[in-house]
Image (tube, rainbow, N blue to C red; front, side, top):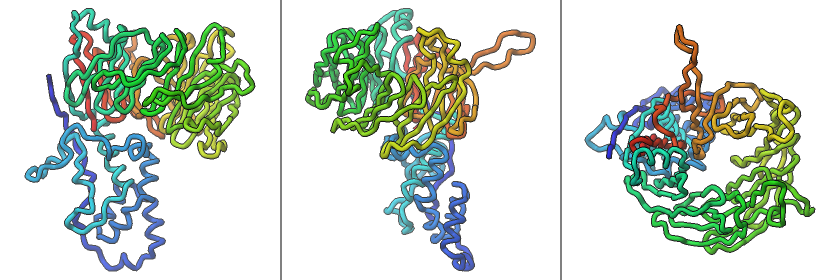
Length: 512
């Protein structure tokens, strides 16, 4: 066992004392003050806030801090990844007799946020200023690679050689403080990464797709035609969903309450079960909705599916994207992509469609509320579609992260190392890198890429480094190199998990 704290510093905080300022500031009209404040940076707003209580109140407004969060891609730190609700790994309050602790600790010190309990009688820190302060601290930890490092042994009683084979192709998913690892043997080991304990082992059975993990429940589709829900802490079987897919491959999505399934098929064999998306309740295992894929009864092929905030979106053969309310079963939008080979992604109140048109990748963004088209971005493909044989897939897929389009390219559609081309929402090319599709990702902006460095003098071969990048609205920002001897099995906004396959040791880097 090991417990090592790597410390960083962050001096952005709220002052509970305010300097005095001259009476001339009160002669400036409020409208002018508000206009000026809208053009200031975060650090400038903090300096202004320290002048007097009146200016502190003027700068302590969500209308000022929300745009600053959005410009950096930090809005999610107050919504889907609400840092205020995520328990810090280390102590989150500064010791009364340790005045320097707040500037020399990885964990954000909650004492920096002014609450209604403060003795100075100041108004509480507004929501989005608090979000900005927490996000700023977290991102500085990533930029300087400052983290708490926890190491513990994996519970695998095998020789080092077999242990390596056991984990080198494993799949990992994190939910809260629990880590689920499914190896090639299909067993799922669940660990508590805060307390370094093995919670349970879910037995090996032939699966029909990838398992999902949310709110302490693991859902696994099996080739027998059922999906089983397990308690991740105990391994106890909670519920069985009879999907009757019988040895077919299944696409399964899960949000902790509803299970969404779509039966995949190959070799052109279709039946009624391939023409619908099924919505199940994980609590009782009952089917609650059938979402009709093709109301005309035709053989409509679903290319991909996404699920978020009780909305189901699916992209179909041709140029069609349909969006349903999962609970009511109502089809709320039928959208057309200006191209073929469509893919769909649900974002923050937006629907994003990717398609190929000629030798272009077309990204279309619609409002999730109204279905109105908000933006269409055309990006030229590095290798034209016409270069591929007709029976092959296009070799492209895309992802929108933090207002940046990542276009992934693999001519054979089977290579785990793929070229990635980054473009902004104006369609401008940013950079090209290589990615590893075996690395699982959370809902964050951190990604592992491969970077080819120029060869040393006198040598003809380039060196390939593994580098963690932050995907921001303004481009890809390099954070740090990672050790090539360890396998990265998970990365999200607050942690990175690596595995030393030879020693069977799990390393958890906590950045929050």
